[in-house]
Length: 86
Image 1 (cartoon, rainbow, N blue to C red):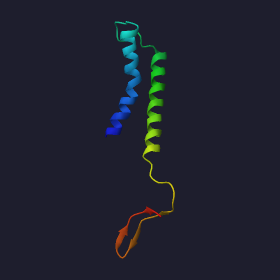
Image 2: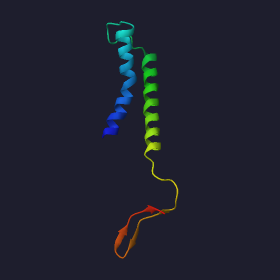
Image 3: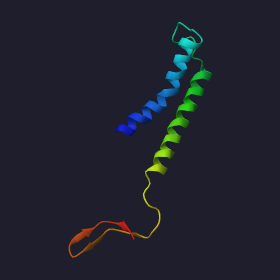
Image 4: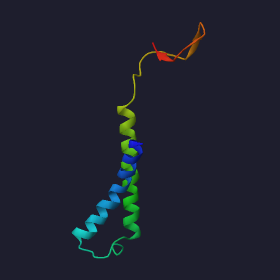
């Protein structure tokens, strides 16, 4: 659940940053006057890239060992032995 919230926050980050830039950088009073189609497309591209990069980072940082031979789960004497690396 925390990962989903973090991914959603990363997706919204460019839109919030652009809205703050419009409000305090350009001093635009209306919330909708600075939002053009080009700005929405740009924020969307940056948002998708942020989410993709964070997913790649999470995948590479939480990966387990990649060496060894995988032994699938087996039944031994009526007991299930889980899969493991040898």
